[in-house]
Every structure is written in structure tokens, then in C-alpha cells.
Length: 259
Picture 1 (cartoon, rainbow, N blue to C red):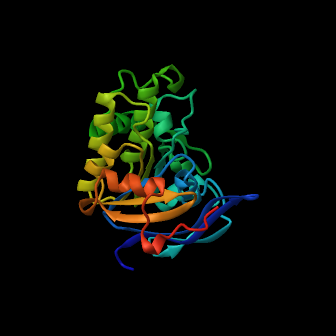
Picture 2 (cartoon, rainbow, N blue to C red):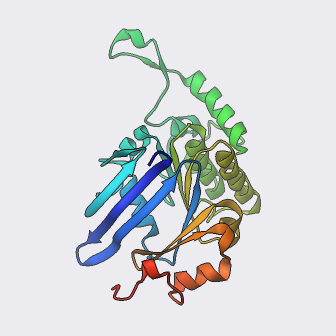
Picture 3 (cartoon, rainbow, N blue to C red):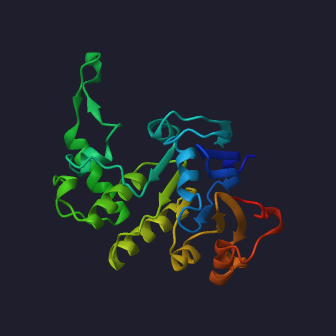
């Protein structure tokens, strides 16, 4: 167990009669990058929402960094060391870049005043510039509010926020879906940097080329269940697609009878 950063056992989520996620057993080791793939509605994002506390699971266990956890919300997951970029981005449109990067973890000074303290705007702006430089994200004016930025810039701000803080686990849900070629390359460089730093990552993506280039292992979801667990070096795109469509199954992940 010493090298396992995240494990789920029988992780399940039902929405009334809809079984969006059923019995997901999953392991992620320290420093490992794993892609989660599957068709739309396969349960990929539902799986991540249970891990990060966005939703409360129907049943099952989540063990993070060696301890059972049950997060009441995403802020609890972040405090524990899980940074996530969701498709919805979760940015505050009326705030600028530094305020979004430090939202919920603002830098302050004069903390000796008890409950009264001052926000360290200068420090947050400098740390923001350092973070953008580190991740290769280019934002012309960090004082610009999010609502005045392009979709690609907004996505890059969300990813820079995730990659800027040392975390025990990074999760990215379709991080390049709305990006152009240059911005996609920046995001992929961020992922490679996380790999070099030994930080584990879960990547949800439909981009087969991206997955085959960036991860160590591929986990395939279908109809709310994990149906395949593949080493990247021992598979190819056609093989992965066969598991996604149900044309092929692994014996230990037999999907017969799934509704």
C-alpha cells in the first residue's frame, strides 16, 4: 500500500433508478499518470465527482494517501491535496487571475491582528506571474477579469491554478477540449512537467493521440463500470476503442448483464 496514492473500492453512484457508476475498483500509484476513457455517459466524470466531494457517493470507499476519506465538498479535497480542473472550470467570472488562483487560499499579512488581516495583493500577483511562467500559460493582463477572456484563456487559467500549487494528486477532466493547437501544446507540457516532478495525475480525455503520448496506464469505463485496465505500452488505439464500444472485454471486467 505504500506506493498507492488513491484507491477506490466498490465506488458507486445512483441517481434514483439511474446507475451512473457501479462498483468501481481503482488504484493510482504515486508518480503514475492514468487516463480514464469511455464514451459519453460512461461514468468518467461521475467517478471523479465522487473522489473530489462534488457529489456524495451512494456506497463504496475512497482511500487517499493511505487514509479513508469522505469529503464534504471540493474545498475539503483541495485541502487534502487533490487539485482538479473540471469541464465547467469553476472560475469566478467577476474576479481577475490572481484572485482566481488564490480563491479559498488567499495570502494575507498582519495576521497578528487576530480575526483582522489584510490581503497580500502584491504577493498574490507576483506568485501568479511566477505560476504562469512555470506552466507556460500566457495571459496578456492578469488584472483582466475572467469574464473578459477567451475560452482558451479561461481554460489555461484553470489549469495554471491546478498546476501552481504542490498537490498530492492532480485531476484534469477534458482539459484541452476547447483549446487550439498552441494552447493544447501548453497544457500537455504542463502534464509532462507534473510527470517530471513525480506528481500523480488522472486525465479524462477523448483524445487518443494525447492519451497515448502522456500516460502510463489507461482505464476504460463503459455503462458506469470499469471494463479494462491497460498498460499504455501494451496496447494501441484500436484496442482501446474496442473496449470502449464493448467489442472486446477483459475477463475480470466482464460487462455482461450491465444495464
